[in-house]
Image (cartoon, rainbow over all chains, first blue to last red; front, side):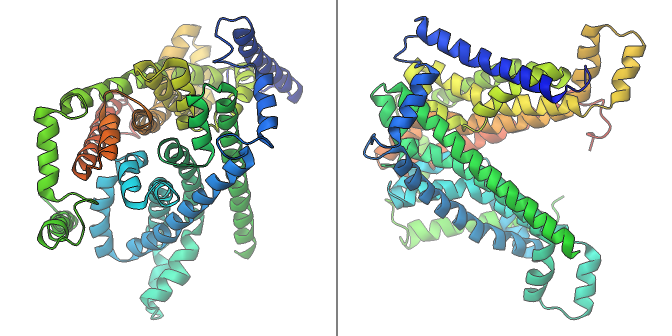
Length: 262
Length: 258
């Protein structure tokens, strides 16, 4: 905006400079002793730790094993949220009465952070799989519902009128008119859900789990194993990014396919 | 006046309250160990408001949580918005900061909690740090996008009229980007509350999250519900306040006047 667009080479150079400054400052802070290295390991130590964690267990499992158990809960929670949220959203988009009944409840619950469900989740479903799954569900559910609902509400009215004139029943109307037309919105909602679900998972595991990356980080924190804490953060970030990239790809694929069909 | 929609909404809420009473008190289908009855909820609310619970009265806990969110949120605005504006303005700043941002951004704010506790302990400082982190990212991204979406002719016109650099930022760039900035702030505020609750659940000595934490350990459903309701109310109230501020700040903006 202020200047002309940079060439690729300039961008790379500035990017490298920024990264070097960041890593350099980090290394300097930890090696100079301004921050005790016990609390801030150098980037290299963190990298080493990640490599070691691939094979050496910490808090009962290696990093890939912790990730696998986190991912299992995560997938369960997000799938559950989609399986309930999307159909409910579509139904609310079609049946006005249902909309009027559920919207006030939903608006009331919206301001309660998903993490605040932790005590009830632990009380109702325990700290193994059920509790964390419920918290992930609480994080991932709203975007599923809202996007399916909005998608269904903003279907071209002419489409609905035409289908109605041809005598389409409620079930076929929802499955064959509303659902296809709302798909882009639903998919966008799923992507948001996937991100929020991953965040909720981290929170849930920090508080109530007995396995998973979050649990590993809490254990590491209690043992002042700072490299392991940072390794956990990076692993969570990397998996979260991977999920987002994959879903983006899926969204793009779907869009292209629909574009060809139209 | 209430429309048809409003009446059905009120009816739903009334029906839910009746259902709550029927399921817990009247029939006992939902056991008191799982979910409190209305009377237990009321008793818990009374207990924490007057006699106190988890080391303080409700008002003390609520004000403490509110203070932490306000401070973390304020630090995030002070640091995030200028950084976003700068990255939007200068391609070089964007190119230099983006890679670092790409590493930090995917890490959920909640994942910073263990590190914050290691660095700063269980007190207020650690919580303000994680709230700052959680609210920082949306502030930066939206301020950045706000600047990038400004009409070029607007800036060129201001330049041609000889507007000095400082005034260009304060009187053209910042106002033009402000609708987007406020969108970012709303997301930031939500993230701040989520993070606060999580941080207080992980470890605290006072605050609403601490009430939840103690109630969970005491297996005290009535107090859990009180904590959740208070968290929801505080979130709602602060969002409403931010909405008021937005309306005032954007009063000049015709598009936002709806």
